[in-house]
Length: 513
Ligand code: KIV
Ligand code: ZN
Image (cartoon, rainbow, N blue to C red; front, side, top):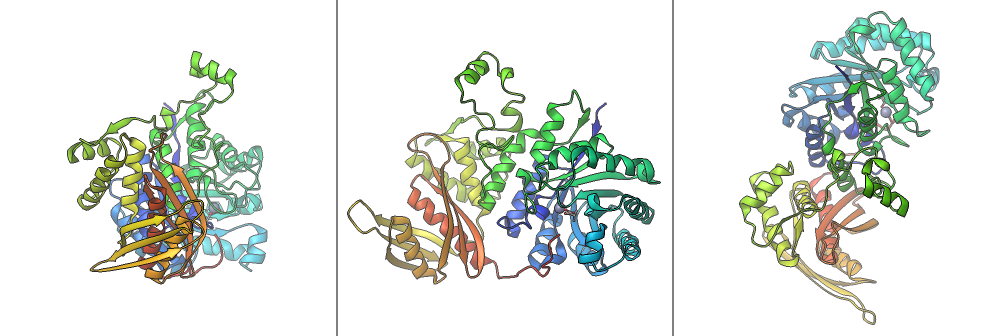
């Protein structure tokens, strides 16, 4: 029987801590639920000591994710970090404390300003403290790949003796070459007493584009857990990408007899959800999930694929859940059919979210003849990610054309109050945003604006993603409609509502992990 490789997802920790990928608690929770559906074995929900927001998010994931993956929280090898991590994790069905300390000479000397002996002592103390709280303790030797191998063996042995159940060997700066990194793991497997009792893990960054290759080599050398992220997001060039690691193992079973617990059909949706939440799209040629990953453009390729897909496809789009546009519902579909189709798509909504999504679905049917799975998913994701709405759109009117000054009038509701303003600008979106700024008095600086058609067809829904700087925060907002100006307004309001809902609480830890 094929041996199991554990998939440890750190999208919500290593991924989220990199610039442009920050998520609020609701978004992290949504993402965590999808990662559970995807079937990850361990979900690292955050770094609880880093900030109040991180703490709350880890706690919410620990409390609400039932019957799913192990929930891990990261902490430095310090009492205060470990205690804080446990505070956030203690409600999880299966909690894991993940503690780490740097072991390379460069890090010990310049970052920690410490010594090898002190690092050894801190390792043992941290693992023992974590062990007082939970049986499941992971230890990471930060910058392991640039660590003196004899010292690394000593640290790993000490961590195991202190009770660590998983030992993680990160290539923190993405420096290793595959055979070299694999050799390091093989050497640890051969030399460290007790290593057979614990799970050997790998955490490879992608600075040289080798994160996935290094992870696979580590597996060949004995690692049985891979730490990775959706779309490969993470510090600097990112981490090994979950979808690439998993599909490489699955597609090349002939050479690597391993299996994972990942439901690969959920990969595409998970990737899309992350793109929607963060507003950061993957490049079209991104392996597995990019728009061109299964597109065959050249005539000779198309001809081959028509004869048999095996000619140019090493895996099917279906196997990773790339949807075939399927006509599902229309004007006459009732609430029951709407709910059932969402269930088939694996979407769970609260009764209130469902009611709101159904109203928007009906409105969409009035504007669009055919409603596809992608439309439904866009609508409900928007509903599920909507924060407690402070401002809702009541009315929008605009004029625009080749020889007139574009103007817009916007009416917003804030609980019982209604306010209306007009603005003009260099286009109807600019005019509408100016009118909104007059109402909310929270002027936003538009940093990025993206528009995409959710499906084909002239009547397709447009989905707008904006990145806005407001009140000193950088937030992403998303909105959809068959009218792109309305979608733009919804996206801007989504961002504003997030800012209003979230008091500012910067990270307390400035040093990056
Ligand atoms: O890259 C790294 O070394 C890390 C550790 C904290 C696991 O992210
Ligand atoms: Zn990392």
